[in-house]
Image 1: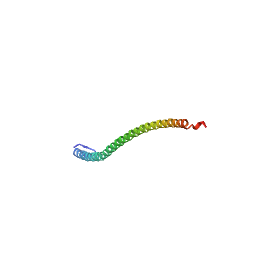
Image 2: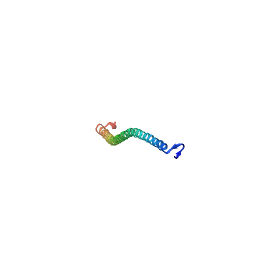
Image 3: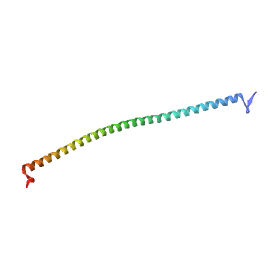
Length: 107
């Protein structure tokens, strides 16, 4: 009978079979652990991405609102400046009319 390292063919085949079964079981357990661990991590990452997208949308809405508010404030400031100019013109006309009617400056 032939032998390798003191083992017969039957013994060698039994050792290889046992190592294959144990190795396959260990690989299955490792694969299962990795799948379950990464699935939970994947769900957390997906939730984080959704929250970041919502935050980005909210920030864009806030920026748009701020821009519209700034435009409205600018328009109101322009109208206010126009009213100030008109008030100065009216005050000047009132002063001129007072001088004309009451002759304040002729004394």
